[in-house]
Image (cartoon, rainbow, N blue to C red; front, side):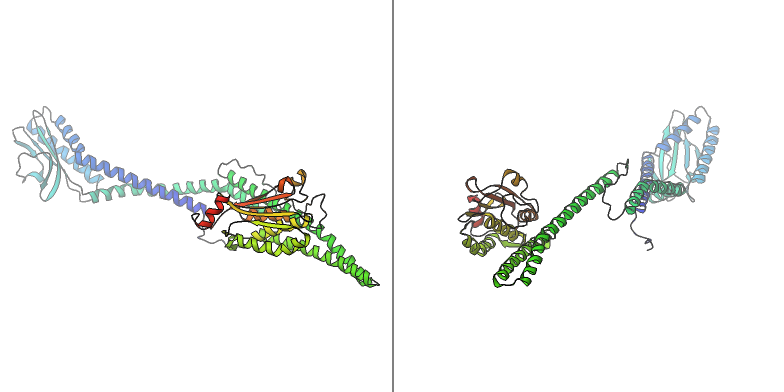
Amino acid sequence: MTKRRWEPSLTRRVLSALLLAFVTVWAVLVTVDFLTFKFLTDERLTLHAASGALAEALSGVDETGAALIARATEIQFNHARHDGGPKGIEDMLFRVSRPDGRVVYDSPGLKNFASPSIKEGTTEVMGKTYSIAVTETAQWRIVLLEPVVPDALALRLLIQGLVQPMLIALPFLLLSLWWAVRRGLQPLQTLVATVQARDSRDVSALSMDMRYAELRPIVIALNELLARARAGIQRERKFVQDAAHELRTPMAVVSAQAHALTSASDLPAQAAAKAALERAVARASHLVHQLLTLARLDGLSTQALRVVDLVALTRDIVIDLTPLADARGIEITLQSPETLPALLFAEAWPSILENLLGNALKYCHPKARVEVSLAIRGDLVWLSVQDDGPGMSGDELAHAFVRFRRGRESVSTGAGLGLSIVQDAARCLGGHAQVQAGICGRGLSVVVSFPLRGAPNKADGNIADVAGDG
């Protein structure tokens, strides 16, 4: 695929920025020169310097000599102005007189100028505006008149004066900048080539020595991303291995019992094989359901967020599990406010509660108690499910959320995914789960907490009551 001609380019962007800086410098130079010109013009510093120099040259000279020197100076000044200035520029005018006002020399342009005593400032001569500088000595009164250059013309002249040198310097500057940028981006191109050359299955850390401060954070970030990818791949690989291991047993039982069912010679043998087959299928179905639950939790996105009433949802789940609890003689109690709306992943809450209650009903002995508590503490939702069953040892509590890990004393046929699902669902809600001792120090208590989002104003009565209960 050919490279697009005008696609975004760091080289072009840097060169454009440097070119803009170049133009900015040029504009600043023009501005500085213009302000300097305005200052010299307004203060008539150049005119004063010229009239002062002419006064020194006329010191001790008679009137004839003074006229000759003034004429020669005028010619020299005006020739210099015409050679270095724009076309059509007006001549400077000179007047040399005695202190009593008697004129010794007048420029041709002042022959018809009637004012015998010209003062500092500006004046009109033959329709032109002139700036005036006057220097007086004991012998002479010297007046210099310079045509006032309009600001627009002065600015144009200054711009034209800088254009040529800047245009000459620009190609060399751009060439050197282009070379510098290309050289500067070479390490980045090397990094890109190194990453592109890696095998798609290679998630090991980059071993490049980035001595440049600008590229070091990129390599560090890439290595951190690769480290997370390695950890995720290892987790998924272990998960697949454990899932395959766990599915192998019920599948083997299904195969064996199906064979036993087909070869059974009498009704009792067929009934026993059928019951064992149903148990194996149920175990495999439960395991697949939990695996799918984990997959759904991993794939949740913000599009799955919606407002639900946690109290109503919790009551429905408790009611659905009440027949199973009654069959085992286990009492389930629920303590909660009347309503608790919250913005969350709708699938996460049933995953938490169904697994916690399912574990409690599965592992607890008959006549046990299971207490469910739902409340708000500060800005957090707290869910607690505790029982007075067999509980877990200290080592088992430390590994309670590890996938496919069951207690040593467990007599259940579970896959060891329930608490892992609870932990993942709690993380999806932005919170976490923790385990501790249950009722009166016996059994097990699992507490899930997460931030309350999308709830009504806490001035609402129900929310206020719950916060008070907490």
